[in-house]
Image (tube, rainbow, N blue to C red; front, side):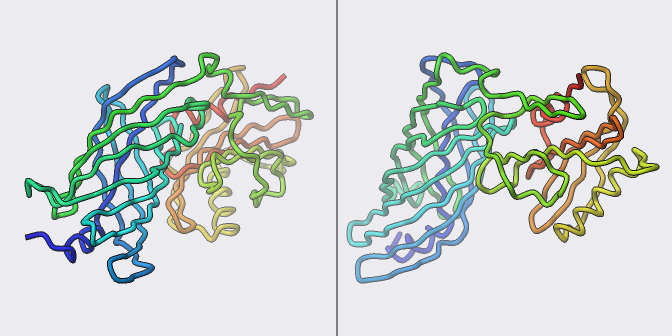
Length: 320
């Protein structure tokens, strides 16, 4: 028999996996069905009183849409356990991250939970969420979703969602980017327009850094420095690792690959990717060009191995 005590205990594993799925193509209105599974950190209880208890938790997991698109999610939520009512109300914010690094931020206004009367699962729940904002191909997105799911005794969740959203008809790929122009050496770069300009750089030669969001773990940076005498491509990755170890106290640094390439305008360049850990696992992809006695380096850093779409930021480098 399920008790109020077991409800409080199993909430340590409870996670609400919400999907708000979007298409890369602008449209008036879209609907998508999807399924999610996830896992939560143990519930942190911050207040107890007779008939009431408040706690918070974080969650992560993944979702799959009926068209095959997948994404990962991270959530932070607060529970209000109304024990006398046999229900729990959860308020949460979450972020979905897609393979191309587009993201959607959403919120629950309220989420009631109760015991499963069929006893097939421990808990059942259903509710709605609302989109707060989107980035990159989800700029200007509006909408939300309805969802329902079950929480089993072992902490496993099965959730079904129906998402409905709109994107501005004028939203195109070109509207998501802008041109960064640098003088002497003269070059330009196609960069994300909606990323946040940042002053967090530890590189004294940085001329521009933009972060995807306030965390700064996904970012790109443009640096221009004097070309050291005798500088060779083969030393670049090793020098970058030394910089990361010095400035960020990074550990477990590894060069994943390095090679000579040519940019779209035919300019010779050198690319490499490094895995490193300053406290969390990060990946840094860099494209370097020697030009007019200058070293131009464009860097992209992410918490996942850098996607082909993110690599297009440094690979868009064009010289006049």
